[in-house]
Image (cartoon, rainbow, N blue to C red):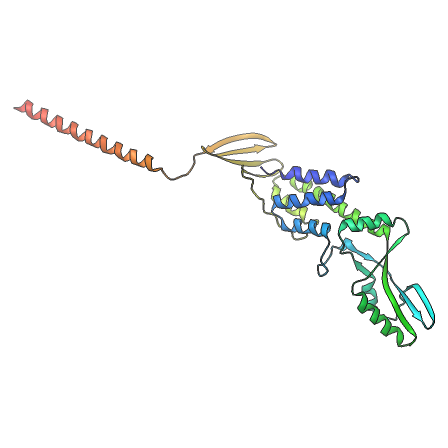
Length: 291
């Protein structure tokens, strides 16, 4: 029987332990997603582990403010680490390049954060860096023909990267907290509780329990119905508060076997023949008595 509750509990224990890498807990989410029948939970955990594809929208906590810097040549002078001034690009473009979507695998973000603690910043290439460099060149040369961009990059503080990893850990704890709260409500089902919980990390998630070979469990906090298949029939146990309150069995519903129907038919023929012989014998003795 699949134990969904213990799966959530294990994720919570690991997420609350800062010594356990978040990646290990995300792998537990993939396993739990398989048990729940939730492709959304599996996909979210896989994207956090392996990174998000470039065309995939990243969660909001992976979007960080990252000012744009440029290295350029102005005539005979080389300038490095200059914040991109307003007016070179349209305001809409300027604001969009200042927001960086972190598509990287979570372990890479964690590694960068560990290597750049404190005020040390990480220089990263923005999306479409080549095209952006051409736009800056074009905008700047309108007023200065001697201007030429060497490189464009964004600067992300190590603490900001650390916060991304921390927010993933917090999301995991929040997911389990929602499951605990929802499943403890009277009349709630594990399926609805799990669906609301998974929606914390994967909005719009759906749940479809995958039944274990030995039986299934569909339960709430104060009532559960557990079924198990056996050769003699189906065993049904209704529980309340974890205690078995009733136990019933239902006979198996299978077609009659050949030998069962064959012997039953033969038996009816024999009984019918004996009955006819008795009737005939009675009539014969009655006839002799009259004679």
